[in-house]
Amino acid sequence: MESKWEQMELDTRDELNRALDLLTVETVGEAQELIARCREAPPMVRNRHEAYGHAAEWLGKSAHAVGMVKKDVSELLLNLGRPEQSPMEAVSSIMNSFMDAAGVLNRAAAEMKRVMSDLYASEELEPERTPMDDFMDGGADFQEAGERPDDAQDDPADNGGEESEE
Image (cartoon, rainbow, N blue to C red; front, top):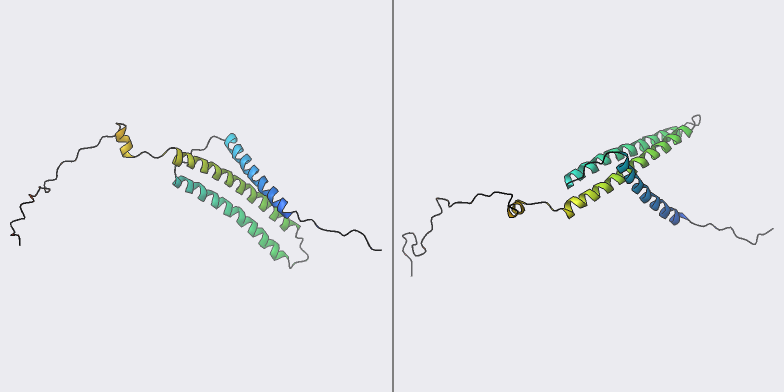
């Protein structure tokens, strides 16, 4: 018997990717709020050098978490040729490593968002003061420069005792 209806597939990967992107943004925002509420306020990032320090710290933590995923996948690869060994433990370990890595990456994104906000405030909204700014406000003392002894003014009519060629 021939069916009147044809089975078709609906590709929802684009919707899934958009939903995951939205969920990631929301998760990072919530993580940033939780970090701010659950501990003392971290010191404000005052310059790009401190920002680099935070970024390097989270890069190390992220690399370690991703390295654990890589190690677990390698263990699964080693067990592929052993039919007597169940892959469930290795896959469970991979899942746990991915969950840990996702948590680290979410926290890293939340911290970098805080660093970006602090850095914007410190570099864009509060420009660095210069010594001239301090002088104009009356807070800096400058010494007047005196004449140097070897800076004698030469008379333009005097050409050093040399005869001029005409």
